[in-house]
Image 1 (cartoon, one colour):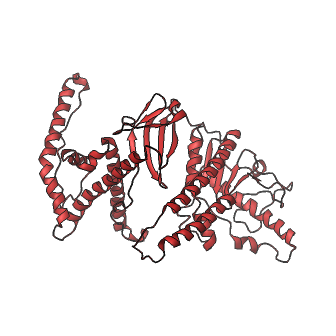
Image 2: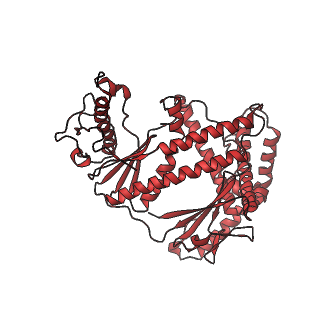
Image 3: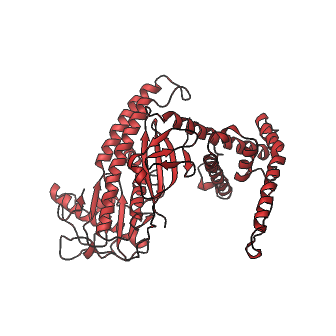
Length: 486
């Protein structure tokens, strides 16, 4: 498989190219809304029984006016292809068809990407021309992907409405002032191994040592974020990374809150826990500051009045994002290092469907859990593992440990230290069994407890009251052979 590497450069407000990036992102937002406007007006005009509204009539008149020009251009393209095919040997010739467009109607109230792209070219649409052609087409494709998802959801809603909370709504307009832009390697070029050239400007971005990257520049993404601009350079590395052959050496990663990641392997290594309390602390302080300054900003305002963000809030968001991203990079690097040390060929990450929407851990714990961006951590693990040919599987977890089921099988009238010791001897094997079951479900062979975990007693014992008694594990004693913390 192709191996890609992404580099990021942050451009702040005092940078000389800040104005250019702002203009490009604003043009992308306008292009997004223009594309959505044409699709919406055609769709609503022919799917409603009402008389055409002024905007709908305007769009339909524009389509009718430019239809002969569009089809004439299509016929010219067809003739050029025919001439090109006739210049080839008879065996290599392909059959060429002339694809002419039809106006939308009540029987077909849709416009596709090719039709709208041809329409914007024929009418020299202002927003379409404000960006490089490939960038405008990239924005259009994202809009059509949204509409494709809407049509699919609408069909499913008609057959099974109980699966949805409400009827799917048509894609709306983008209210923010800016949108991300994609530039191809034909529009952005690295000059002198140091400067990145952008289209429609003479200014160049100094990328320093990134210009000496071995790979070939494939794409540049310009993303407005937290009042700044993030320039992402995507390189295709010269050698494709082949996936490792299966040696049945697996790693299971369980994501959580206090324990950000719990790591179990079937290679005999002790389980490893990545602490998550520092991330909880960052989120707690962030929520306090955000609530305070947002309250000041919205004081005395109605729901639809005033501003919803400020420079101060953007600064807080930016700081929190960088702190969490730094910690996640360190955690994913640690997981990657363990996988390489143990010669792991498959990493399995547990994730339940809608696990944050359906979280029922109390108000405080719900806030702490849902504000941790676990998907970002999963993406980092996957990105770093694939560089070494390690396969990553994200699967649904089989179960969770219940607090009531723990306490139900433990004596209540015990000294505190003894009670904690018995509690830990129950919960740790129970929890690790859940992680082992995740690996079993993913067609991994059974992990022998005697090789996976160090045991505090010489004889493995079943866990009283555990639903996983089919998998015998050794008992643990408090503070004896506990998982290592980072």
